Length: 339
Image 1: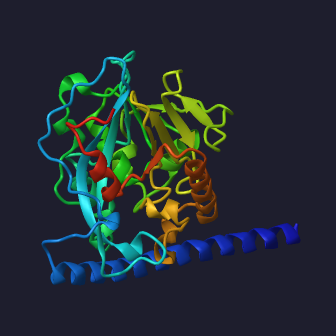
Image 2 (image 1 turned 30 degrees about the horizontal axis):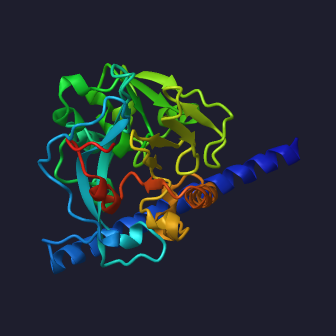
């Protein structure tokens, strides 16, 4: 009995140390990133550098004519945030500012036009009130917890394009904020992610977004069917065109989405497993100062290796992190569709 009690006390102490360490690390990151961002913006407030030299985002483009047999996707840019590169990838520079996007991805299947799927929901019109409710002043100064140029997905989409289902890559604030704008949609999440959303708090999960709401939660029914090295998957439409992939690590129930479009393009949306595509190409983890954002950093490294192997095995696969503007700029944004 005494030994059991002693072991329990030691386990609690270790857990407390781990929590306090992560909190201290995050506070250091707040100060460092805020200073670096302020200095970088002061040097040139008009220009924000993007990694890999991505082209400027297209604006005002008409929706192209797409074959009736085509599965297609469109990226809906709901906001952006300038962040020091050193906060995003190991070896990044403090005084290079990277523009991160907050997006939602709408998928349209020609045989299921009444069952459009949205992957993540982006930021909502009420995101500022959510931040005020769930973040203290210090957290609101963190570049990665901020945004600018807000354009919620619901304000951009006409009623005939509203999704029936919204699958969350994970339940962090910048992916779940827009759920409130689509009250009729089913909210799909891994079981572990729904439980994470119900039990976690700021700065990762905003209770004002996911608790006390009338969201129609639905646990994703993964099956043991391996796709590109990922062993737990869910075929949304039953024809292999849109596959949800379990990739826990960043959060307990993180999910990716592999879409094969009508033209044969393979777009792999990987959520926040990495923040920049270069992290897959060079197999680089998040920087030490931001690593506490990952629920299980070791598991994230395994997912990065798996994604790198996936790309090597199939050169058609295009990795699209949830926030990498250089990759997303090349694809374009709604009303442009990718076929």
